[in-house]
Image (cartoon, chains in turn cyan, purple):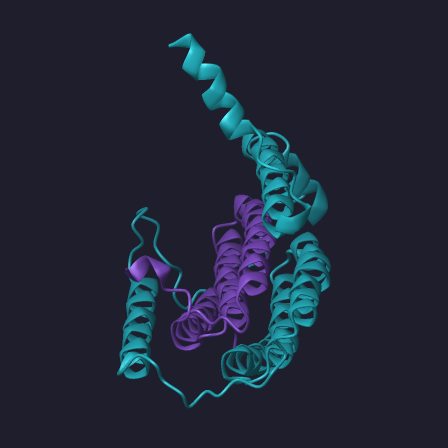
Length: 194
Length: 101
């Protein structure tokens, strides 16, 4: 019963937040609406016995990613109000809404049937917690993450390093970049070798 | 009345659709990025819901990988946006059309 009440309250929060992200004319307001949706989804994670994921959601998404968005908005000074009426590509909006509704219908139809993996969706079956006697949520996640998913987990470290290097390389000011000496040097070295 | 797993899936589908609409409608690249985050979050909600419905903790582990990909994407994407904005003021997604020829 309490789950039902919380589901609908935070469902309304999440949907209004998502609509706010799309409809807000000021990017700062969009970012704040995004926080509302992210926190509502974190509440859902708690409802679904995923406490660790909920904590990470709040810390990483609402804490880090949205703050990064706000930093960039402030840094660039683009917190101006955007004119939503201006439509540069004709008929873009009706077609976009039509396509999205088609995608929604497709997902809902798929959710009511049999999945591609052969697993049936448990329509009408109450969700049972899935709690086992393996310990708490953190224990179970950690056991799977560091055994079955160890190789992907290590690969994420590589991905993050690449992202950091790419971010630094892209966001660096071009005036601070050292003069391009590599390309001409290679050419002058290759010419005598020929 | 009991909340079943399908309720969560329908909510996630709605959030995903709203994110897709925003991605298609908005021209501000930052807002488009936020809509992508919205869609990723809807996928995360689906993962956790299936982890509970199928009683498989792997869904929750996959959320972490989605999170890492989202973080990497935001870092690189915002760097690209900063680089674009430094070059030209007030660029929206429709102004970046050099590839159009």
